[in-house]
Each structure stands twice: as structure tokens, then as C-alpha cells.
Length: 80
Image 1 (cartoon, helix red, strand yellow):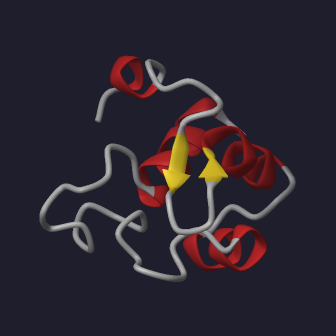
Image 2: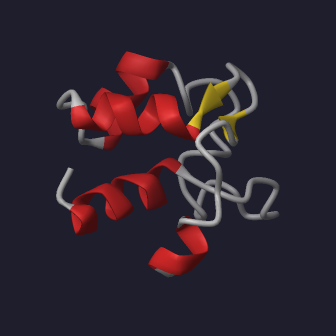
């Protein structure tokens, strides 16, 4: 996913449907230091139920538009 594609998502975009976790909540958690997949999942609960939002690999049917791994990569590129 390109930065331009990523930045089309609004802060209130629901990334984790199981727990209603928004993109904004995830980015805030990353900025607070939860910057690995495991720590981000522990802090927000995102990706801990059905696991589809963890990565494209766990979401083989592409049910989710955005995944935790992509958010972490974006944050890394942006220097969060």
C-alpha cells in the first residue's frame, strides 16, 4: 500500500471490526510507544479476535481494507 493510498483513510476508519478500534486509536497507541504488532494488539485488543485485521496474510479473502502491519509500516515511514 502506498502512502497516498493509506492517507485516504479517515481517522475514524474502523480497522478492527471485532472491537471497534479506529485508525486514530491505533496511531495514538503507536505514538505512545506500542510500535510492534504484539504490543499494539495487547494495548488496543485489535487483531486479537478473528485476526483478519492483523495482516494481508491472515486476511486471505481481503475482508479488511487496512491491516495493523500496514499501519505499523506507515508509522515507521512517517517517523512516529
